[in-house]
Image 1 (cartoon, rainbow, N blue to C red):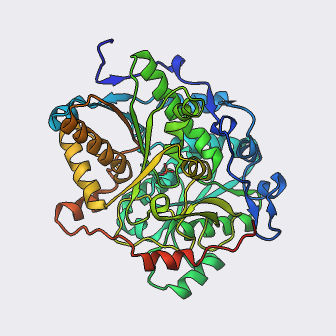
Image 2: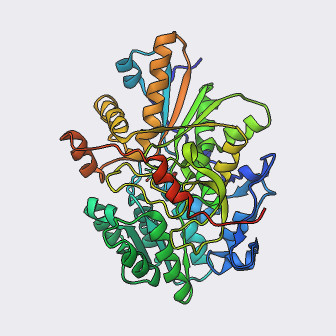
Image 3: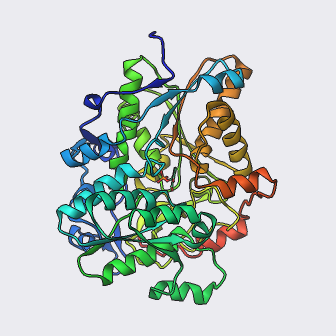
Length: 456
Ligand SMILES: Cc1ncc(COP(=O)(O)O)c(C=O)c1O
């Protein structure tokens, strides 16, 4: 085998020119979105009121395994891609494991995460369609930052509903979004009907992604020539994120690396879906038998403790219904959860693959996640985003298992971003005040009670 460098960089010419559409290779597809008003599958026309037309086409495309990346988006990608596949030599040494550990590092752009891969594409399509503004939500802030960066590049006004607790925990994240020209509104807010209703019911709420989505959607529907864009969950977002998996696969092939275990963190499922896409395609075709693991927080455990059911994507219950693993749109994670990945549901594609047994899922508590993040920062130098550190934690667990069994497995995980805006969470970890919250079955039942009744 070739001598493997610390960092494998593909050249710009080697960067994939098409995204990988998992739906074209899945044996069974997730069911279509349901319009709650008609109880019928949503039509493209209905979706066009909410999303850009080309994104709707991508959302509904089950035919083409590869979808060309427009040249303009490819050029945007070149500002920060290809991203490196890193051999974690220092971590391997510190853990004293026979395992080989690799991570695909998506934190090399200014926004600090993989979210820019979809932001670059979504704003391009919005501009091409002649839209004059966009709205979105952001939880931890990475999506809002990435989108603000892309909007600045394409000169597109942007309004970001930011989960209130995140806006308070991360004032600098808000400042970056504003520097790129985005307008930030902590959610729930009094600027929307839904925000006012949620505030009346829960005046002290720290907000949730579900609330912020409702507000962003309401605003986009009321504003002319405005559309809503989402940074995760939807099929077209996973499509854009497939660039992560394609580059990873190309780098692995270049150095004859064959991962035994592939690990990604899962919030709404976009980086996980993107990282696994081409590997999963091969797995479905019986060409590999890789172990694939999604990692989520114990405080928001949609895959490991959720139900596979039709549900709304937002707390205000205004989106189409999607079949997914969900804790119920009324579930709001504990405000002391600082580790990101706070969405109540999971991407329909990821949910369907999980339901069909193609991968497993684990949940981890945030103090353990920060133990892993700190350990990693001290040997590999990168300060990981708490979200990414979920995948890291399980990669380290697997490497420690290898030490115990003597197996020399190849472990690859997605390091989706950096944690420089998560320092208040690191501070609470460092001073010992960080707590874990694992919802009780009774708490989860309250969320499940908000699931809509949908006829089969
Ligand atoms: C750095 C980072 N990693 C992972 C995620 C999880 O999102 P997703 O599951 O859509 O990849 C987020 C979401 O905000 C993030 O900021």
